[in-house]
Length: 95
Image 1 (cartoon, rainbow, N blue to C red):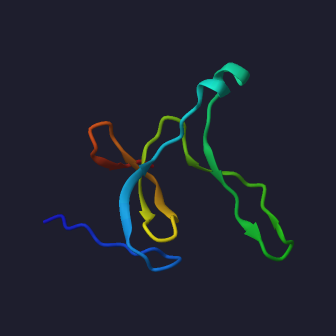
Image 2 (cartoon, rainbow, N blue to C red; image 1 turned 30 degrees about the vertical axis):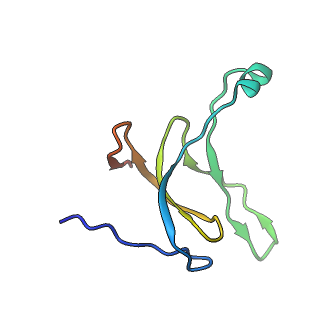
């Protein structure tokens, strides 16, 4: 029995809905810049020095689709990096 867990928003405790995250290029960007790889990166904030660290952590790779949840109240989006969705809609974990 594979029962889905209900997840409330970690910011406002509102109800979340299931969805997906993808990175898309635009035609205008392609015309102006040309073909380039697009990725989403995360940098942690260093409270001691009050600045962002420079160690990029790749969160979403180009052409990757991730399972996500969006809060219906505040719009915050939560996801787990590496939890991808195949074209058929099934979820798989990648290393």
